[in-house]
Amino acid sequence: MRSKIVAGNWKMNNNKGETQNLLSDLKKGLPATEAEVIVAPAFVNLAQASEALEESSIQVSAQNMHFASNGAFTGEISADMLLSIGVDTVIIGHSERRAYFGETDDFLAKKVETALSMKMRIIFCFGEELEDRKSGSHFEVVGNQLKNALFSLPEEAFQSIVLAYEPVWAIGTGETASPEQAQEMHAFIRKTLSQTYSESVAQEISILYGGSVKPANASEIFSKPDVDGGLIGGASLVAADFLAIVKAI
Ligand code: PEP
Image 1: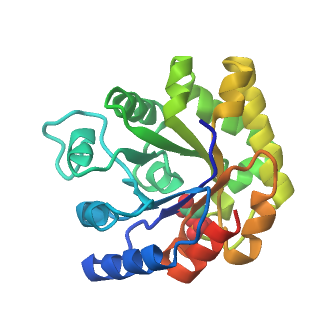
Image 2: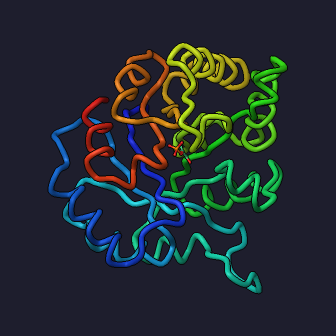
């Protein structure tokens, strides 16, 4: 079901105490909203976040998971481990996982398959690099990322997937895609889904924009018809900023 979503990816930030403080500020300040609000703390703080938010409408997501169900994968976390602490949403394919940890489309496809088989909800990230945008190949790059990681899935799988278009050149750089650039790509994504699957898949999926979203630019980006919300990095670490972005939707 297509819904408005604001999700905060905390990345490798916030120790236990800082996590507690930020969660408490978010709970206290959460405005009345129709949007789903999601936070993704670091693995070690997920159980704590899950407990702290039990009575709150704020949901918890993991930032990553492994595709294997268990075994000799030192340092990795399985879907079952996440589910056992009440976390049923996972971010897959973030550009930092792709760039720094060598996660390829094929590798991500396996994670997607596992997450779906475990009935988890996926926030699937993708987006072009600056050189792709400069050379005009951004639509092709994004189309291929979706095709390689997702388009072997059956149509019903898309009920459990949220897409997050995050142009790499706009992540953590302060440089945002213009609302028009975001809209243009989101419309392209819906068209691609419609052509590959059906118009209902294209219309029912939530597509988030991510890349230097801040209180100052959120409402303009969110006003675009094919933008259903945002995946927020830096600004999700400051309660007042994240809450202002929630209010902007
Ligand atoms: C992100 O990493 O998903 C992100 C969008 O980061 P930022 O908001 O800091 O650009």
